[in-house]
Each structure stands twice: as C-alpha cells, then as structure tokens.
Amino acid sequence: MEIINSFQAGLRNGINNNGHVVYCRYGLPHLVCLPINRPDDPLLSPAISHLKAMNGYFAQQFFIYLHNTLNSEDVVSGLYQYAMQSPVALSDYTKGELIEELSLLVTQNKLLIIPLNE
Image (cartoon, rainbow, N blue to C red):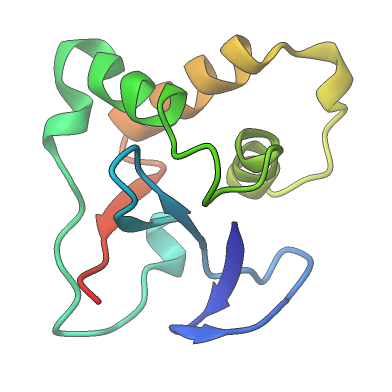
C-alpha cells in the first residue's frame, strides 16, 4: 500500500493523507480516499458506484480479496485508520470487522474507491 498526495508518490503520515492506492485481486490499482480528499483531476475516473449494491456486499468482497502480494499485509488496518482519521486501537477488531466497517463507509459515500488507469 502506498500513500499518495495528489498523485505524486510519497509518504505522508497524519490526517492530511489524500488516499491510499490498493491493488484489487486482479492487480489493478485503485485509489481509496475520503470524498474531501478526492483529487481534483478531470481525467480521474468516477468512483465505483456498484460496490454499494446489496448493502455493501460488493465493497466487502473488494476488501476481502485485495491482492496478497501487491498490498502490504496490514492494508485493511491502514485503510481503517485513514477512514476514521485517528489512530484507533486496532487490536479490538478482527480483520472481518474492519472490512465490514469499511464496506459500510463505502455504502454511505464516506469512502470512495476510484479505479486508476495507468
């Protein structure tokens, strides 16, 4: 998982992150970001809206089947901390609970998943 800032690769810790690039099960890059952090790029694809269907079932499947080798092993916890904008105690949650919360945020339009065409 790499942290990006206006599509320039680089590490930025803290509340000012503009999103995370994750790789789906097919190895395609996707930007996961908050709506307020969506880059202002006219060539950027719209967020994937069909992931909200069936109460976030497809968003949940997206997060469950992230590519194992292209993403870091703590990608789900990093996304959760980014989405909540706080260093929450992740030890209180299982990976399944974190994925469920992330998919709920996607259904509520509080978290966007945008495909990146490179």
